[in-house]
Length: 226
Ligand code: C5P
Image 1 (cartoon, helix red, strand yellow):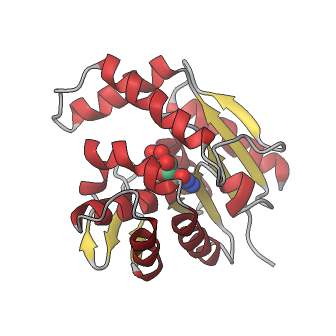
Image 2 (image 1 turned 90 degrees about the vertical axis):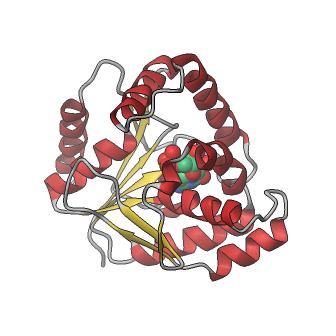
């Protein structure tokens, strides 16, 4: 038997990463950022100059690449990510990767390869996994399933804040709203495991809630379930 799993899904920018990291730290669970894996593959495809519609080459690459995730102890920083031994922690957050990742994540072979790895990592449980299809496909038997949402406006505002913190201020809030809406559209209309709330997931709208408030809510649901 395995330790419990918390699945957190939702659209881009709903605050999943920050909240999932904090929930994991509070409960002493491992944090698994599945989006980082799709981003890492996308980075490699761009790096190697493979065309985004060359499904064959992409499938081959997805099956032989080695992705490593090392959760950092610092709650504020994202996971350390490497692909084929190259540290891509920063690179996978670029606007270029962000705008292409949904096209790559829509491909069956890519999803098969990554989901297999995620399920392997999750065999023993004891984790908070975050993504788009965790409650529906990766860990359908997760003890707690959360579907995190927020309005497009709120999500764009949060992204802008993140970018400013990183010293990037060339992007406008209008552009971010457009990008987020487009990524939502692609992620929720794709054929393979589209972004969708699992029937047994609890929907949490984070508009106007602080990270701490959302974290407390999820920790509360978890404790009720045990
Ligand atoms: O969560 P994040 O924004 O880093 O995810 C990047 C992209 O990876 C998403 O827009 C989606 O296309 C893809 N993704 C996915 N399934 C997951 C996690 C992410 O398709 N479980």
